[in-house]
Amino acid sequence: MTNVLDIMTKSPAVCMPDTPLADVARMMVEHDCGAVPVVGSQSDPMPLGIVTDRDIVVRLVAEGRCPLDHAAKDAMSQSVATVHGTDSLDQAAQVMEENQVRRVPVIDEQGHIIGIVSQADIALNATDQQTADVLREVSEDEELLTRVPMGGTYSG
Image 1 (spheres, helix red, strand yellow):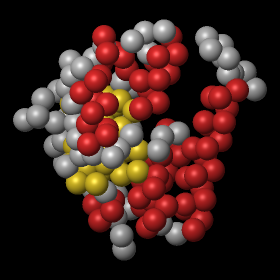
Image 2 (spheres, helix red, strand yellow):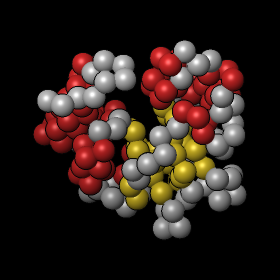
Image 3 (cartoon, rainbow, N blue to C red):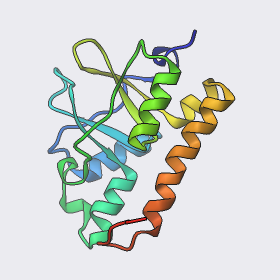
């Protein structure tokens, strides 16, 4: 049976809370990724948060703030869902669905980041029903988010 360890991107790019967002964006380009986990240190890579390309746009640019003047801690999502390398693809898909995210850091027994698994990884390796469930759940949430006016709340 395939597990997360078999399909994850190993040793993903990570940054610290004080890493300038310009550097984070360069990491995304260099590593062809849309998310960079934020860790306390390179020697103790426990996830503190995650910065996505969307986070930079929604938390800074849309508010009229220049990303070049900010660090990862200013744009990161602080609650980070994670999975273990030994988790099944079903478990990873469930975590993505429950948290409405497209990417999840993979941690080892000590809680250190060892990889990242994406919606695309699941889509390429999971059963058809699993893939459909992940895509539907994450897409539904994003559709709702686009309907909410800036500064507004969704009540439907």
